[in-house]
Image (cartoon, rainbow, N blue to C red; front, side, top):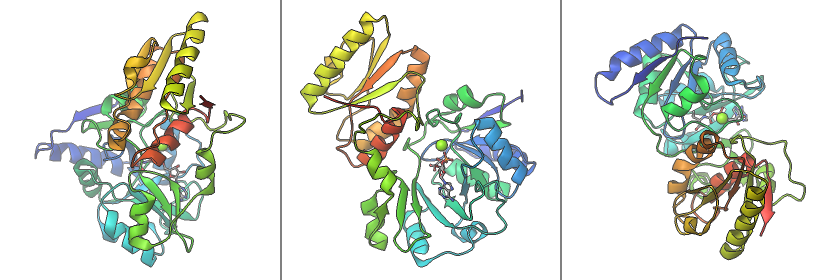
Amino acid sequence: MKKTLYCKLTGGREDDEIFQKAAAVIQAGGLVAFPTETVYGLGADAFNARAAKEIYAAKGRPSDNPLIVHICRQEDLQKAASEVCEKAKLLTEAFWPGPLTVILPKNAAIPASTTGGLHTVAVRMPQHPAALSLIAASKTLIAAPSANTSGRPSTTNAMHVKEDLDGKIDMILDGGAVQIGLESTIVDLTEEIPVILRPGFITKEMLEAVVGPVRTDPALVKENEAPKAPGMKYRHYAPKAPLYLVSGTAEAVTEKINALCRQAKAEGKKTAVIADDGSCGRYAADVVVSAGSREDGRSIASGLYDILRGFDRDGADVIYSECFEDNELGQAIMNRLLKAAGHRVLQA
Ligand code: TXA
Ligand code: MG
């Protein structure tokens, strides 16, 4: 067990001392959790192969899953990537700092343990003053996955980080709750036509407005269909209890979820439901939470991981959720919910 130093940021000049301390930890090969606008990150020196291995150990993450390299100024992109194509310039100028990660050929200076052995590298400039200050003070680039135990929902406040990583990392910078709540959009720029590998706050339409046609990774499109054989392989962003998504018209969904809850209760299970502001009064479950307003993707995204983590604290045995595809962030929200549900979708 490590002693994890916990520091609350105020947003004022008094934070400078904390950033200096955190930078010293990074330079010494240690691990610092920090806020970004998307989710909390678990940072280490991107050029230190041993530090990257420590990240994998703290998260319990397979070491072939590559990390994102975080930078604080546009010109540092060259330190991570060996080649910056025209589309990368256009996209990063349009959306950085912000929730966009680009995949480019890797610079030889970035160790293989940071990129999971790949010849490409993921790079992002976050839009959070604390993240930018930490990177600048560290005078290096910071490799950071989301600051959660592998497989669990990402962390959107410092309490979540403590739940997962206390005693396993050197320092936690508490910058309060994040703004967006879902991880960055990842776009692969190593092909002629950019490919979205992970949907996020920056949508396909926003990318296309800057660089023309963009494709979506076919694996993502397939995931959005209700699978015939609900797979259990891909559980990610997941609460401990099994989660089922229920799809169909509003009335049919309410009826189906209530029937499922009655059945589960008869088996002695504690039931939980994720609904929206308009529908949450219609459910007879032990725990009913509203994800927000169904038309407002931002409201749903910002609280989703806290809701999923809440079920672990409540000790729910089974969770049923409505679907939330009809909003500007529908693709990103449904991608995370489907993974959390291990692709179990019930048709109402
Ligand atoms: O918003 C975010 O992106 C947050 C904050 C902390 O910046 N970070 C984050 O990191 O979500 P992580 O490690 O949880 O997710 C990174 C994703 C993984 O799915 C990984 O497989 C993918 O990025 N990735 C990283 N490098 C890649 C590469 N070279 N090629 C393809 N995928 C890559
Ligand atoms: Mg992650």
